[in-house]
Length: 313
Image (cartoon, rainbow, N blue to C red; front, side):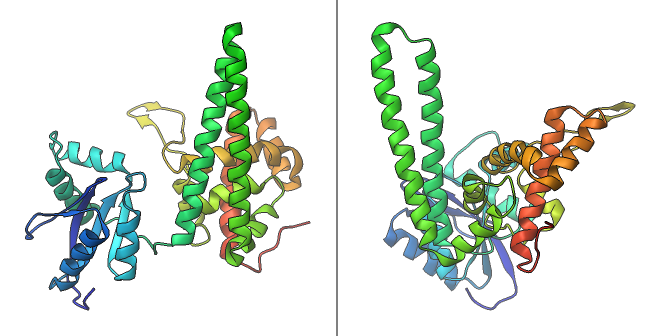
């Protein structure tokens, strides 16, 4: 990327086979989503008289090679939630959906919302996320098969039991792969050790935090809780004052934190006292556990932010 201080937001719509580039004052262009096509894209971006800021969506993996190439070329990029992109396009009155429209809307989203750029594309962290995605897929399949087994007719039970046995074996295999991957990465292992030193936080919660929250350790308390979807939002209108609720965020981490909160509320001396205080005040158990989960993510962020921070004994 050149040193020109002028920045132009460009949208990059990504699919399995194509990369569609659009934005203000540039010619709409389409490239193959291949090594050759990505190389052509990078050359065009580098030849621009303005510094490109690429806005793209998460696509389930089709964006990984592009992000790696942008990182190596030192071109700023931001990966946003497809739901946010679609909601923005709808708010702009763009109900039609084509690759060209999507690219232009991503560029406009960037210019108007100015989303925070990705700090970097960490290939090792991304590989961990992909492996953990696979674990989550298998866990969901296990739940579905277990539910089917509960109401299965006799002739289907053996088939479902065999399927469950296979899925459980695959879960064990992927968890071993994740464990070995982390142990072979000194920095990741140090982070896991720091996170699991918090009573109530197990290996799965720590791994999910590393896989889905690469920003952890570089956030404020409010940013950490909001990013994981544990920041309460008001629901007031006129004279009506509704209950505050949580929503959005990185649900993969939030789900793990909730389970960790159940354990922490029983065995972590500090968080157990906090939980019992909320219950004594009449708070519902679920609300109290969410509050514990919120304390946990703030604590985990602090553990990685400050290497000298130690927990009270």
